[in-house]
Image (cartoon, rainbow, N blue to C red):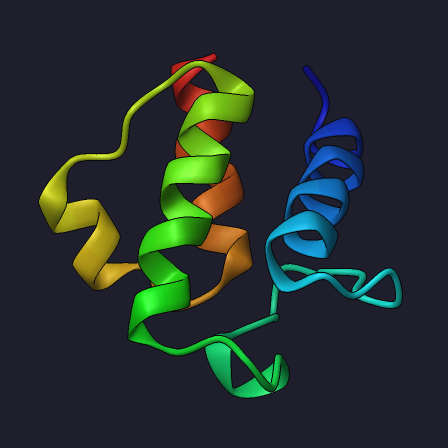
Length: 79
């Protein structure tokens, strides 16, 4: 799957989790860029992404990802 396709699919997951159709993520998107992205929503987001892509992040990845770009690289490696 191309990075472009992963970003398109992540847009859908983020929009669903945060109930905001205007969200469009980039490699530089962080929790600071999305108003409701707090620690609880981070867990919901991670689970939604894992379910969507049929993969699992390990705990170290979940706690050290700095932006969506790092998330995309992990997803790309796993699928």
